[in-house]
Length: 83
Image 1: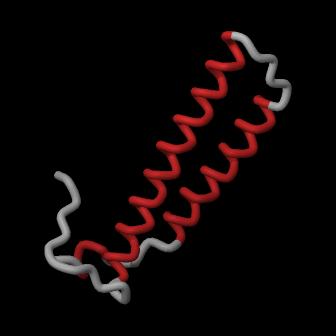
Image 2 (image 1 turned 45 degrees about the vertical axis):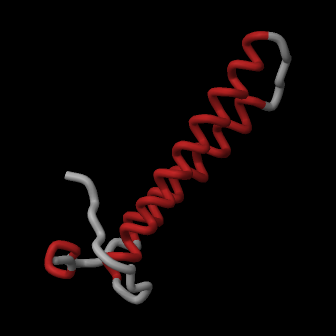
């Protein structure tokens, strides 16, 4: 079931903040996928990009730390807070 939020969001609501962090993480994943796959495509077709592996590994670590941040900042009882 998709996330539904009716009305304006309250920036002080922990559930709203958590969903906002999830959306930000998903956007981060989409940008990562687009950039890394596009760079890989250019690398395979024509250009010799020597730093590609280090770039992809570094960004993967940043992405994993972002996911860890989302898990750490999760509110204790999200089921009880939202209606």
